[in-house]
Structures are given as C-alpha cells and as structure tokens.
Amino acid sequence: MAGLRFVVQQTPKPIWDHDVALTAYLIEELRNIPAGTVIDTARPFPRLPIASFQLEGYLPTELAHLLDEHYDIAARPVSDCSSHAHMQLRTANINGTVGASIGYFNAEQDIGIHLAAVKELASSRE
Image 1 (cartoon, rainbow, N blue to C red):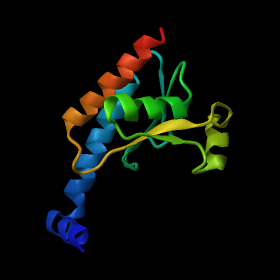
Image 2 (tube, rainbow, N blue to C red):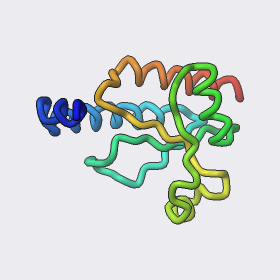
Image 3 (tube, one colour):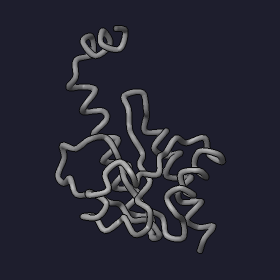
C-alpha cells in the first residue's frame, strides 16, 4: 500500500518522465561505447525504462555477473524472458543481452556509475 500511496502522491507522469529521461541518457551513452551494442527497437520514446545491450567479448551472463560482483550494479542477463523476441532481434545465438532497468530512485549519477563500469569492462577486453 505504501508504494501505491507514493505513486498517487507523486502522480505517474513525473515518475514516468524521470525514468524515460534516464533511460534515454543511458541508451545514448551506451551507443558511444565502441564495443557495445544497444538492442533498441522502441524508438522514438515512449518505451519501458529498460536498456538492453551487449558488450563485445562478453557473454551476457558473464557481463551481468561482473557488473554485480565487481561494481555492485544490478543487471540481468536477458535471454529466456522472451525467446521469440530474441529470435527476431537475432540475439538468441549469443544467449541474449544484458538488461538494465531504471527506476524512480535512480539518479543521473547512478547512470554515470553504470556507464563507467561498462566502459572499464570494454577496455579490459581490447
């Protein structure tokens, strides 16, 4: 009930706008990482506040594990949530992607930390 009260007090639009703005920032910056690939079929916005990406040299399970264990960043290897979607995106053959979800309590600083970690991991495999 507390969560519902919070959404009613804040109203959904500012929550949505915040999440979408941070997601757009994350996707835009992930695209600037040479070894990265953003899987993005929901252009233009609106979209769910999720960034799905791959990083050259890493399986999604390995990348999600490293982000979690070494950087304390919660990310999920996304492969079995929708096998048909992965077949359409041609990501099924590499075991999917890594998914990063954005929420209302994330800040731009959190996105910066996430991006710095991905950049560091990308440069370690060059």
